[in-house]
Length: 200
View 1: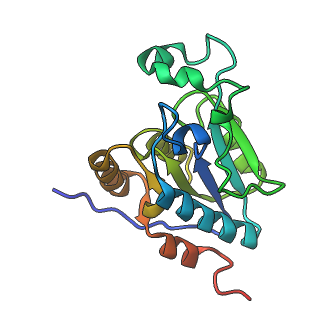
View 2 (view 1 turned 120 degrees about the vertical axis):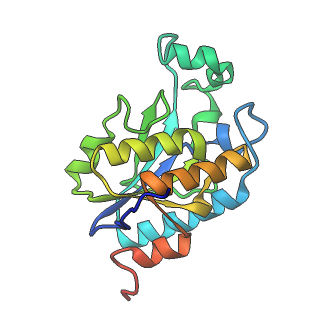
């Protein structure tokens, strides 16, 4: 049985949360990475639109400064240990344009909200809704989407701008997020929903 759900869409001041589009996840040379040029391209397109509209943009990266950071998580997935402050793997993919005024959020766990200042930064800028993109659909994207809802933000996920190492996990998590936590839309639909859409 399917539950009825309402389409909430975007408000007057949405923010773009680009989750972990860092070299360690977009470069298959890293043990954590995968080949995902189409996801990078979709994020680049959304970034151009958000920057053009003057809307807030937040990138996340994963950085472990000491052994106590997320120690259980890192024991489960030892490849995470390459994400150190001096590593190129923690840097935002060079194909994505970072503007002055964009925020970079360092995190140690899956959600961009968990033990970070993200919610306060969003409140300070009057953000009323979120567009969440990045990697991976079944992991950090989903965790951020669920936490976004739990912080009382309507959340939108552009399906082409998220990706996963496992196609089945990607599809299942998009289905589940759309059913419960977010509006899953195309990139075209998201851009058309931006408050500056159609404004010359």
